[in-house]
Length: 258
Image 1 (cartoon, one colour):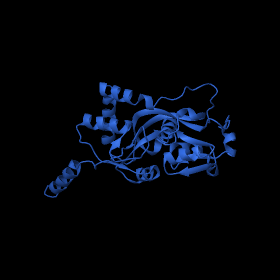
Image 2 (cartoon, rainbow, N blue to C red):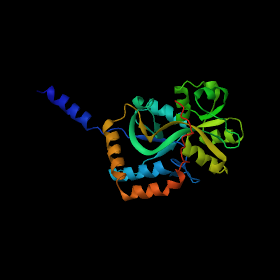
Image 3 (cartoon, rainbow, N blue to C red):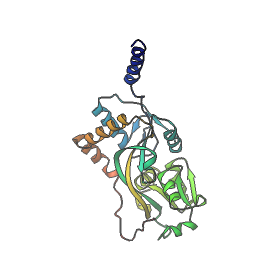
Image 4 (cartoon, one colour):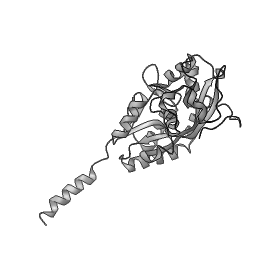
C-alpha cells in the first residue's frame, strides 16, 4: 500500500497537467489573414478566430506571421502548431487535424486577359511557365497532377507570384483565386485585367493542426466554430468580407485540370 500511494499521486499529477498552449501561425495573404500597417493581425480568418476564442472564454493569443513555407514546415514539426488559412485537400487530409470551414474557395490558373493561353487539359501546361507560392496549395495540386517543377516559378509570397504574372515572367499563376485577384488589386491592377483559364480544385479553407495536437483542444475549437457560425456576428462578418470574396461566374467553357 505504501508503494501504491506515491504511484497514484504521481499519476494524478500527470493527469491534471494542462494541455500545452497552441501556437498559431499565419501569413500575409489578404483578405483571409495578414497584418495591417501597424503590425496588427487582420482579415476574415483572424476575426473569426477571435470570435471562437471569445466563445470558448479564452483570451486572445499571439499570432505569428511567417512566410507560408516556414509556417508549413513548423506545422509538420511542432505538436502545438496551428496554421491558417490552410486549404483542406484530399491529399493533405490524412497528414493533419482540421477545424473547418473558415471559407470555401477554388484554386485556379489565372492569366493576363490580353494574352492568356488556352488551357484544355494538363497536357497544355507542359509548355507554359506557371507562378506558384512555395508549399502553397496551387503548387502542391499541380505537383499531385504530374506537372513538372521545371514548369513552375516558385516564390515565397503571393504578391511576388502576382508580380511575376504582371511583368510577363510567367504565363499563368496558380493559387486561391480570391487571394490572387485581391493581390492584383492591391498592386493597382483591376480584376478585369485577369482571366481564369482553368480550375484545379474547390475546397474548404481551414485551421490545420499537427497530428500530435491535443484532440480535445481541437474538438473544442471545432465546437466553438460551429457555434459561432450560427450567430449574427458571423453573418455580419461574412457580409463585410463579401465583396472581397466574390468570384467571376464559372462558365461551362472553363476546364478543370484533373
